[in-house]
Length: 144
Image (cartoon, rainbow, N blue to C red; front, side):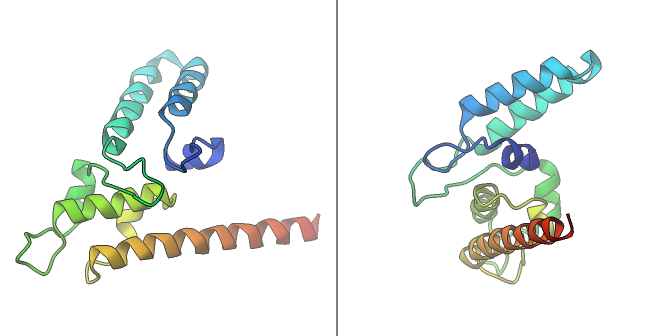
């Protein structure tokens, strides 16, 4: 899903996920997929919209994104009195991963870091992946 968002530019002027563009993308995909996959596509788009509904519309704010059960099972969670991040803190990290277009974010987080440090990590990963993609594109153009 994040690949589709990156590829088809479904980010709004405020750099947050633009639901209108997601609806357009969903409609286009549904026009091209086999009927047997339509329900799965609709469920995935609905799930994504549910996950990102708590993201901030403020330019400097990221907010939270709801964790899926799969993500929650992969992350060590605790309460405010433990060393592990809370579910709310992980939701902030997920929102940052969506905001910065980091795929497979649960494999890239570091549970020994604070949630603020993990948010910075998502930003660093995003910047590093963009630089890597630019380098690869430059290398491909050089060989063409």
